[in-house]
Image 1 (cartoon, rainbow, N blue to C red):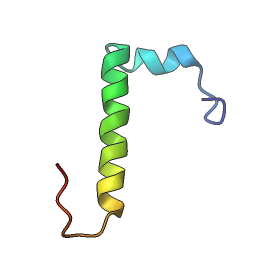
Image 2: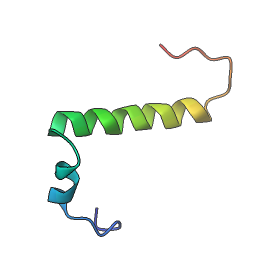
Image 3: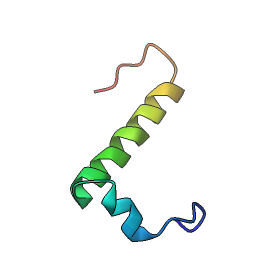
Length: 44
């Protein structure tokens, strides 16, 4: 957050709860990983 010059509280105002924030981060990481994997590999 320091690199982005954003305070910790600012992040939480964008999401309903910490759980929603963590889920969004997880989905983003999973999507990024899926885009970098070779095609033909099934993700389960």
